[in-house]
Structure formats: C-alpha cells, structure tokens
Image 1 (cartoon, rainbow, N blue to C red):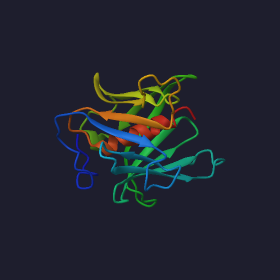
Image 2: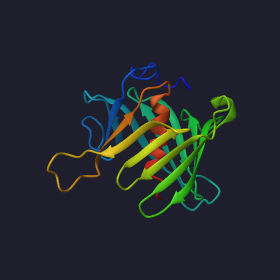
Image 3: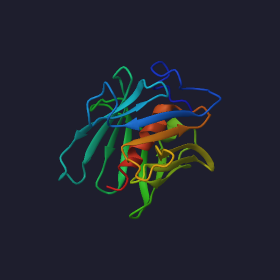
Image 4: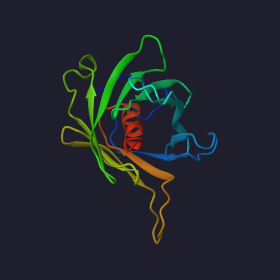
Length: 197
C-alpha cells in the first residue's frame, strides 16, 4: 500500500530489502529543543512533528493537532486527537477541504499498556482497512505495529550495555521491509505516543 506522500523527500520510502531504523528524540541538532524529530542512521533529520495546541474544552472538536513534516518542512499528515480516545489523520496540513487517510480508536488503555485499532478510509486501502493494530507501552516508547499478523514496525528505547537507567528521551523505530510508506508508519507511531492521554 503506497500512499505517495514522501517518496521524493525521503529516499528510503518505497520497496526496500532491509529494515530501516529511525531514531526519535526531542534533542536532535538543528531542530528546536522540544520538537520531536526522527533521524536516519547518518543523523540526518528525515521527519519532524510540530504540535499545535487547540482549545482543550471544545468537547466535539479536536483537542490537539500534530503535523508530521518531511525533511524539507512539507506537511505530510495532520493528526487530530479527540476527547473520546480517538484520532483522525488527514493528508497535508489544510484546514479547509481535508482528505481523511485513516482514523484510530483506542481499544485498550491500562497504566502500562495501550492498544489501538487503525481504520483506513475504504478508498485508500483497497479493502484492507481495519486490519492494522498498534500495541505497546507509550511510557516505555515500546510498541509493535501489525498489518494483519505481520509485524510492520517496532520501537524501543535506546539501551546501552551496563546501563542501569535508560532515558526515555531517545528511542528507535525499526520499519521492516515492505511497500508501506514510512510517513504513514510515523503517523501511527506519533498517535501511539499520545495513546495514554
């Protein structure tokens, strides 16, 4: 399933043979402190997430908005979080005529575990829609993203040998071989990170 959002901006998108690691942090060089960004193995920023707070008291309206940007600063997806534990992801950053790509519903929320169900819009997914799941612990930055029963991506904290305390500020997202757009996986992962809220 290729959505065609970031092929030109990130050479790793598309068909590939090996897993790709992206390293997430809010402290990457060249990015304002506190802005979540993802770098490749060479340290080049390939994705960035800008947060746009909305009115927290507007119940039927979105509570929060995040925009996933590519390395050039082009908006790939706008992610809106709602009060009922659901999210909607639109293509680009237009507030006018938006194209809904997928919606996410939280199906499990405990202190240490969150599970999300990803529902693609029928025209975008060619009938493959509701077979995506995201499961894990946002606190530990650890999750697995599945399409049907296939593991598509997983994340974990950056552990080092003989390290007792592991910082939650740096983590790795590994995207396994396939034809899925990396930006789409990143959008799901960004939603997962706010899944406990």
